[in-house]
Length: 269
Image (tube, rainbow, N blue to C red; front, side):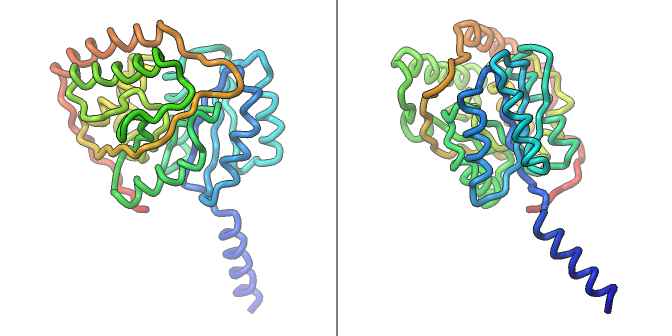
């Protein structure tokens, strides 16, 4: 009887502290105005999401704020601190490796500045599960142009960047530079061995292109993208320059390789 009672107690405790199968990766650089609010908002959602912050030595003290929250949410919130500003792509690759090492099934990309609505994390996961997708993209352009508070020049630059990518690569995605994404573990298990060359926002294009070339199922769901209200944008003209040349080089390189999936362990929801 004592043994059975103990087993029931341990099972009850396990149910209460169930580890999430979702990790939201948020790269940061000087996001002190947003970081606490975005973390608390994600933790308030009806679905259970863990968060991994990857901070590039923000001089404004972003990492200090995160460390204070880690002390409170030690089982849900994690922090990687890097020595400097090393690029968006390398931040996500570091996050992917961490997520894979910790066996998360659903790995999300999201900005820290509320340009992506945290409530849509639930929609991304549900689309992945219900439509058996391997990659779900929160798309600004799948149902028109759903961007708020961006200058017209920036909207046009972003939209026609995706048009350019589709023309060059043949990729059937409306929002090729989107940064609000849900990957299944199995996708990153395959792509992890890839030599991802682009480090800035071109990284987003390269990841989608290689996911597509490997034959994974990709879907887009509409989101509304709202420009940040706090903090400073990290966007620059150089970002688009890298993407322009990188896309052409990526397409040429794809002619000289086979995209064959290696056998991997299948996972279930």
